[in-house]
Image (spheres, rainbow over the protein chains, first blue to last red):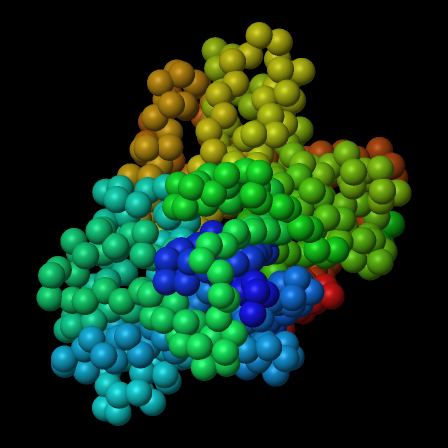
Length: 264
Length: 264
C-alpha cells in the first residue's frame, strides 16, 4: 500500500494530472515520467506511441508502482488496451474520465473535443461519449499548434487567441455547450480558450475526474496509502532544461528532484 | 560511383536540401531518411539528437551510400563531429555551407541567425561565421513555433506573420543585412519572413550552398555518377501520412515511393 503511483506523459503536460492526484491524495507517493526524448506523441502513429508508452510503462513498473496513470491523452487514446494487457497492474487513462465529466456537464448533448491529431483521429473520445450518452453529437478538432504555444509560454498571447479563434470556429459553429480539453497542455490555455468560446461553453479537463477515479480505484482495491504526506519523484527521458522550466512554473518542482533516464 | 548519396533530416524539411542536390546533380541517386518517429530534434539535447542521428546514419550506411548529407540544422549543429568520426564515409552538414553563403552576402558584417533552440544555443552558426568573417556581429534567435507553423501548412497565414514579427524584433533591432534561415523548414516561410524584415535583408538558406558543396566533394573524390538520370528512395521512421502530405506538396513524392522503417 505504500508503493507509489506511476504517472506518465510525453512531456510536462501530465503534471497537471499529477497535481490533481497529489491534492486529492496527499498520502500517495507519485513517480512521474515525462518522455521528453520522444515528445510530442500527438502527431505520431499508433505503433510509435504504443512503443514509446510501453517503454515508459515498463520503466515505471520496475519502480514497483501499484497503479499506472496514463496522463497523456494521445497515449490513452492509442495505447491503453495494450498497456492494460501487458502490465499486470491497474492502468487508468484520461479519456474515459474526461468523457464522463463532459457527459455530466452537457445539457444539449453537443460536445466539442479539442486534442492532438492522433487523439482526434483515433475517435477515442467520440466513442466514449457515445457509449455514455446515446445520441450525443461529438465534434472533434485537432489543434496541433496549441502544444508548441504552451511550451513557448505564450499562454495568453494575442497569437494564441488568434490561433484559438481559427481552430474553434468549427466547434463553435456546431453550437456545443461543453468542450473537452483533450490534451494535458490545454488547461494552461483556459483563459484564452474561454475568451474565444464565450461563457456559454463549459471547459472540461480530465485532471480532476482522473484523480477522483484514481482515489476510487485505490479504495476499491484496498491499496490506499495510510500515510499523511508523501514525496514525489520525477524522471524525464531527455534534457532537463525545458522540462524543468515548465515543471517549476507549474508545480514549483526544482532541478534536484528530476532525474534524467535515457532509454537505449 | 553509382552508389547513392544519403540525405537525412528529422522530418520533411530536409527535402528542400534533397531537391537542391537533385537539381544540381540529376545523375545521382538519393536515399532520404526522415526521422519522423523522433521529430522534432530542435528542442532536444545533444545526447538525444546524437543518438537519433547515429541510428539513422547507420541505417543509411547499410544501404551503401557514398556520402552522407546531414540536411537537418540541429543534427548538423550537435552531432556532426560524432557522425564524421563514426561513419567512415564523407559527411557534409548544412551549417558550414549556410555560414559561408552568409559571409559572402553580408556587406555590414551584421548577420542574424534564426533556428531551433538547440541550434541557436549550440553556437554552431555563430562560431562558423566568426571563423569565416572576423569581426562579424552574429545575432541568434530561437524560433520554436516556426516548425509547427510550417507543418500546419500556415506558410503565409497572418498568425505566422505575427509570430515572425515578434521573433524577428531583436534581429531587426540589431540592424543585420543578412539573415540565415537556420532550419530546413524555414525556406517555406520566405515570403512571410521577407515581408517582416523588409527588402534590405538578404535571406540565406543552406540548400543551394550545400548542394554545391556536395558536387565539389564528389568531383574532388572522383565519386560522381556517370548516369544522366537517377531514382530516389524515401524512408521515414514513422507514420507516412504527415510525411507524405508535405513531401507531396513540396516535391510531388507519392506514397508508393516512401517506405516506413521502424527502429526498435
